[in-house]
Length: 242
Image (tube, rainbow, N blue to C red; front, side, top):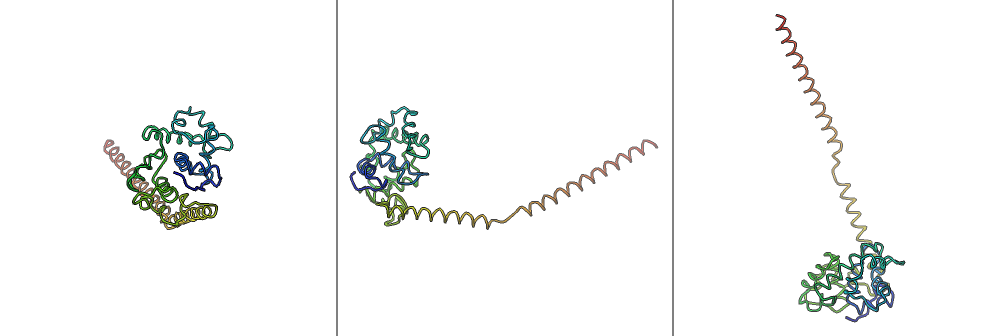
């Protein structure tokens, strides 16, 4: 797994991503709620703090949790939420140890189809459908891992020149295109949500009127019942006097 990668926009961090399957998986895991290049620079930062040239799944899985969270939290922090992400990184590495003997590349090494690749990635801790699709696209577009049907398995992220995710980042220019696409998607989603809210019928007035009507009817019924009770009492009293 050696290729030219420019996801972190830092030569040394990108060099690690290019040669280390685990670094790539961890970078993808970190890619949420922070800028993409920050996420993919994380594996290199973490490796340096562990005094290593690469990440090792066995070492990370065996690390004392609080100490590992402290490594992630050192300034500059590896992630905006270093504590919670430290747990996720350790969970990912423990899964790799349990299922692939710690070899991250084994996740895709012998897959026969894009569907199988997507399924294996989906099973990784912290990898939902979208993240698994994006990493499938990243492997196919930049790492030469392209089993039959990988584009279909990656969904829209597998489209050529789509600039939808990190799978299409090959330098500063493409990074800006991907970022612009994400911003447009968020804007469209926000506008759609606003339009849906504006189109929803307002039931407040009708509900209030109905509530008032019900209250009036109840008051009337109560008044009638009181009158009937009073009449019955008067009749009984008159009968006793006779």
